Image 1: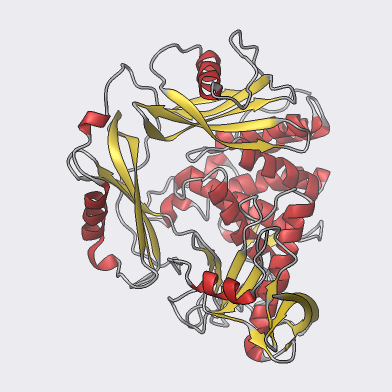
Image 2 (image 1 turned 90 degrees about the horizontal axis):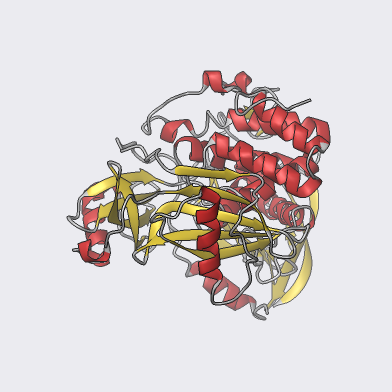
Length: 532
């Protein structure tokens, strides 16, 4: 049930530990993630030991048996526990399970089991790290989590600065280092000074050495109707709130358990979200307020698309508040989801204009939040390129024009007509590859392994499907794949299989969508051509 008082919303939002800003953090040399996970991709299974998955105390045992049966593996795979369940529009269930060995979760080892309405398993996919022989890991943990945090902080040194937005946390995992699983603390550190960052540091629980690291920052009362003018001069009617004689850009009609809240960051680089837009008249038309009107109106459209077309209630699927801040920094050429909210820069007027103006960019950043709450795609290399691509794919779907497959044309190089930030129909226009033969094998120091460039390949695959079946149908298939099939370290091949499986789930085998899913990915060099 929603809180009744706007004052509570304002205080709660201000007290959030918001923790990053712009994609400008220093690049670091790092160890590439292991590539020796066993990939499970069983589109149809006839498992001898498959049994109905039910919500009872034996569910974990059932899941473990199903996974071992799918792999035909009776060795030490560890145990699996379901940590998230999704039911799709067809009534099918998708159980995302985490693997544990010796009671410790194995990083990136997730398996998703797909069942029909009766609980019968029809498909299994995911990635697991197999341990050759049983062994104890708990007795190898020599340091505590607070020490791991201190080690990570000391390692970053001047790259982070503690202020009121600083946040750190740690969790024990088993992580593959040089081919072997080792107990490691994943320490997450978010900081806004001296540059915005969201570091993921892997600290050995045995000797305190840092075995891997990367910066995960992903860039880019009573109800009342209010009026506003956006940065294009268009008049908008918006949902707001009225309390104590003031009107606020706070939509209490959506999401189901929260609000859409739009703030002025006051050109600060920390202290988010800032000041909730308000005035005495209910007319938001000043130059300062126009970017707020852009963000508020666009996020309303994004929420409605996700709710009405994709059947998702806010980014977490549970109706959480959607918070955004405009006027971040001075002339900042960026918009991004920082792990807790969306932040929009004003642009410098040369490379970008006000970034809150662009609907598909707003939807792109919102989709990063959806990804964080579902597949958790790791923001580097192929999984990072998928993270970016799915934000583009679902972002462009929100834009209703069936012929518009350009990202950011409204805001990119405002003094140059006819260009865009990216093109999904022709990625090569903006130096992105559109086929695996041109894949950029960059190391982490270059765009985190090419996440903003190699995303052109899955973008092109989505376009090839979308132009045939329409944006909404394409979006439903890709959303289904993101939420129900992908795992943190998914590759392009995994994404292709997920899209194919999703097309089958939603439209059936040998449907037009099923054949297009196969063909569109084959046309960009991933997987085999459809059988005609």
